[in-house]
Length: 93
Image (cartoon, rainbow, N blue to C red):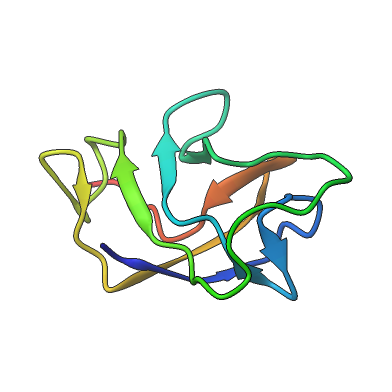
């Protein structure tokens, strides 16, 4: 599974010092082009502090890195796009 190289969405419960600590995230087509469906805005920290996040599923069939809903990019970056937590590695096919 591709690694989440960095996450600039500080409000996410899984983010610690710009590193994702969710075991696996889902990228989905929602209100923005490639939204991180695992984003959780809460005052409680989550995830495994020893783990590095990975892309578990990608629902962006129109992304050049997507093969049968699995991300094939070597790694991704999550950041803000249109006030959402989005996969900034998303690239239309």
